[in-house]
Image 1 (cartoon, rainbow, N blue to C red):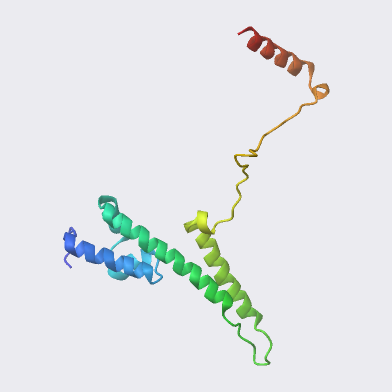
Image 2 (cartoon, helix red, strand yellow; image 1 turned 60 degrees about the vertical axis):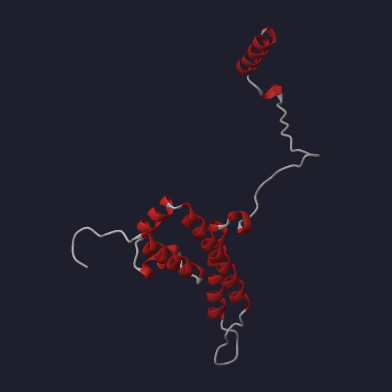
Length: 160
């Protein structure tokens, strides 16, 4: 390729490149690695996504497939037998490696698909029993200045 401005691929070529990126993602490559594998920069690919809603929908499906593949890998790694040492004992280094591989995938899943794979930390009531916040204040522990401000605020709201 000669130096100078790079030309944009034609629509058909762009579509073929995008399909190759999506295929790479479905096979386990990140979007960055899939772009590198087909020879397009991720910023160029992202520009194509910005300009084409159909590509965005295909990208979303490929991303979901990648996420499911990562989840499957985590299960396969966790279920795989652990190696043993020459003496027949469990290889604790292999156990740690598998744990790291599973933990890394779990962490990644929690970031890529938090609603599905993240920790649920929501505290919520339901329609029949909503959460209520009740707070009591021991007025004997308040300073006279604070009590005066409370009374002034109460008087102001009562008068309006």
